[in-house]
Length: 106
Image 1: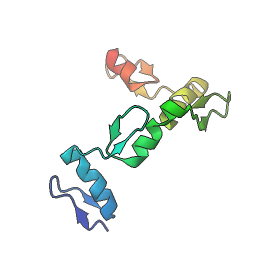
Image 2: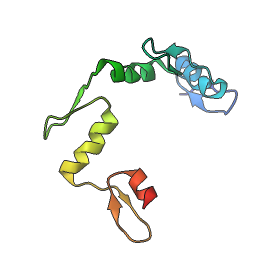
Image 3: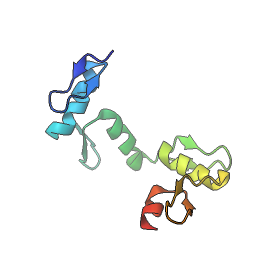
């Protein structure tokens, strides 16, 4: 059940707190500010991730080579080196890539 609807776009949410957070997309409100560099964010969790830039925290570890990463997405991309996974394929020539951005440049 998703009883909380956004008045701007109609998207529904199961929690009021999620609606409030979503609404910041429309208002541009960014109430969470980094004390190190003054960059602001619309969500507290995004600020916490950003702060790893300043703290050097790298909580995501590759099980294959023990390399560490600040972001889960960076670890996932890195793991493709070990697995050989290339999930982004060119519709024209069939060549595949590890990163979507590389496919777009191709």
